[in-house]
Length: 138
Length: 118
Image (cartoon, rainbow over all chains, first blue to last red):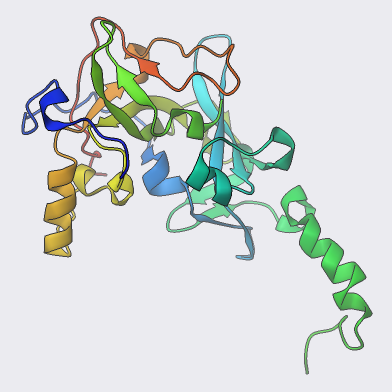
């Protein structure tokens, strides 16, 4: 069972009506609800990766913002805890994001992104060497 | 800092009283312009007495279907509140990964977790 506060440990009445928070000017997103586990497509609609985590940075003024979308081997760490080593993450900079909806869409082509190096390597070194592997099926 | 360092972390007030767990992180696209969109600024944390099953967000929206599921999940996450990031004491980043406990300031305020209607 996931961690929770037992009923007698809860410090506030559960059905309390709370005031609405101050309305910020920009679009509001909840990270887990709107970003995590969403598919990331490039500008042509080709799937690039799934968003497994976000990297946050705090600047000199104390403003904390999302700077990278991360993809990596998170299955084991989500079950057992911890996080993958830093060098196992693939990063896509937030500045490449063009739209956030049912999928998150980039404004660039995915060909140049590090996250697709395995697919590129397999295309060039394995699929490309199979007879007929360098052109679309007829 | 990674988002996963914050998610599911226990939250305490300044007196050490347990308040719940971080079930989500609220971002607002009003940071510095970074490419096509503004950079998402960390606006606040959603704190619930439970960690699991909040990913569907029923306690934050008006979504009511399927009715049984919506009612049950909303009931499980009653008591969820939003606390603004300014009311959170800076996490101790000397730990790697950062110490998984969030401590709020003395004068923190609790807000409704509902997402604004755009």
